[in-house]
Length: 261
Image 1 (cartoon, rainbow, N blue to C red):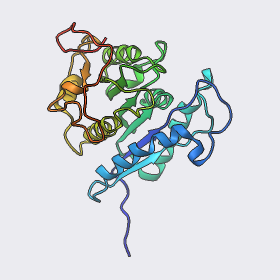
Image 2 (cartoon, one colour; image 1 turned 90 degrees about the vertical axis):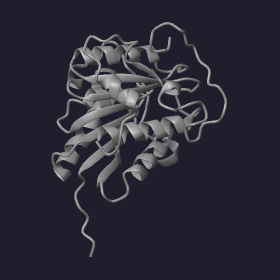
Image 3 (cartoon, rainbow, N blue to C red; image 1 turned 60 degrees about the horizontal axis):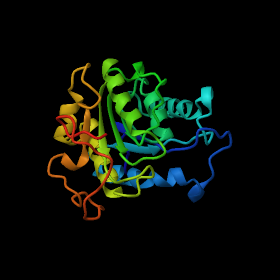
Image 4 (spheres, rainbow, N blue to C red; image 1 turned 180 degrees about the vertical axis):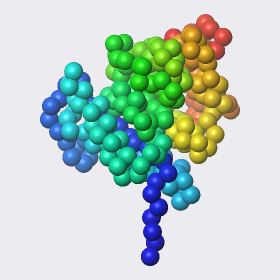
């Protein structure tokens, strides 16, 4: 008889949604935002599935489709999922991985005692959202420079605000992609997996991310922004699933880091 050990860490995934929507998310394949996160769930599970790490990978279930203003439904769903995990597994480290609205919920729920880090994919970052709950957490945001649904500049601004509140935060810009993370999908999946496992101490973080997370609290937003195509040996086509060819996007040459915008 095989006795399953309790998990030593966990990754909770939070999919996107809508600004408003009081109905329940549709089931199965009809829930497109949830389906969009399955490759991330599978990639993280593969990376932690050798049996030695005992990492639980779980998707958060939403009660409502939308954020719904002051109701903040996905935020409360995330907190409930963390509370449930705490009852089941105890005081284990958790990394939250969220896309769009799910990233907003992850950032808001980061003050939970279990949370060690947040990986936000194309996050929805309103300027009025608080950041004090991010203190002492690792926050890595990934955003396409061509995103037309959520604002990459808002993500860039949030990392600077989070640093001033005591977080370790940075932004990785992905050129030539989109909000749905379909273009350059391999980059999104591989980098998210590497960062997630790195934040849990199960592997090395990209050197540039490690350096950016060590920036002082008063570091500028631009200084804390990385270009995925200038990280390490990564070049267009090097990430699994990428098509060869030069990515394009609204970049400028200003700033010593080659940061976007």
